[in-house]
Length: 632
Image (cartoon, rainbow, N blue to C red):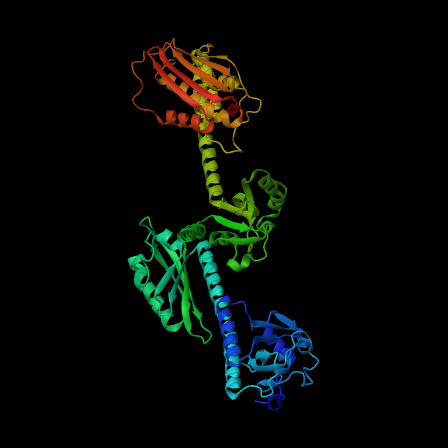
């Protein structure tokens, strides 16, 4: 093959930039294929009977040799590259004498110590046809006849094999990268599913379960792999299995997302509510490749929802006014009974209302100046105020209770109230007070009538005057004692300001004096007594005196009672001791209404204790009360 017929220039359909980009995209760092490049290079040298053979890749500033035989350098500058001319040829480039070709006659590889004279190079191309370099042979001896047809055909075939090796290298690099990506993706998947709080599972396109994360096995307590395939459904509560299966079959048939709530068997043997979800994963053509699913334990959420529904039902069914505001006092919710109380037709009517809008003007000032500061200071407030009816404008007496609402972090988010309508209670109290006043009036009339009858006897019988006078004094003392022991409203209660316990007792016991002699002797430590305590003490001691007159120390001519007070630290002890009455053989078998009422007053109103010692000489009663409670 003479060189004059083998150096035609190809019509290029590529640019140098494209060629260099193709070269840069290649990865030649594949140790397993290097021997194949070396073998092809040796075959080329043998077939062409050349001492030098190279796989040369031509870059922008250099040519470097992927494989070489008989050449001791790995690269040369591009300006001395003969292969740079070969990649521009359409066919194999053969130069029989390099000294005679104008492209190579001045080349340092020709004129220098290597004194190369012969070159033949077949182009190595990418699959796109872009030339990358050559498989070439060189000889320091000129060959005017070039290569034989067999040598030329073989060299071109070997160049094509180099191209195949390069593409194989590219393919293997892509496969390795893909496998590395898959391995990394698998590791990320394992880390992700291991870190997720949910139970994670995947299935094939046909729904066959082939993966569960550790959380699933921890939750269920099942051996690894035992719930693959369709065995998962056996973990559900029997009442939920068919429903879960039906939803899953529908998703497999339609590709719709899967979502269902069911009870899943826990490793403890109990069933816990779980939310199951799954989404299909599609390939580039839109076909379902796999399903990715999760199971979330919602047992605690279910219980919380159940409790919330119960609380909501309690709020809505309550006959009290129950409401809540935001942190600025704007109303967010009022239950049905509350809306009915203040004349709001439906839940939308509360929009934009403020807590102050619900009160009469006089109560608004109390809410702003007293109530809300007290809530901020001590966490609650309760007292009587007046709501305003939105329809009629009338006042509504209520027992208002307000307290702050805080979120899980303890941050204040608003106010809440449970308020009670006091109108019925107020009407009942008014009716009771009217009855009490009527009864008191009638009792006073009875005292007056009895006193008047006694006075008539004194006028008609002068001898009876001393007795009648003493009787009327005792009757007046009883009437005065009655004022303390009868039920009272705040308006009708007797004034006790500045009163002491002994002063109160002398007032109550005055009715039991006889012939100027006090049969109830009062001694010891005196203390101040308040309005609430005075009523309770009067009831208790009047009951004791009445029973003593009937059965005890005051029922005989010579009997008496000592009433002694002792203050010891924070406690006050009042002792009632009877003497001279009938011998006590045993405690009474039953207690009268008055005694029961007195005992309840001790515990309920005075927060004290009452002890009774039924000694043979007479009853000894000890009443122990906190000193502070006596002044209230």
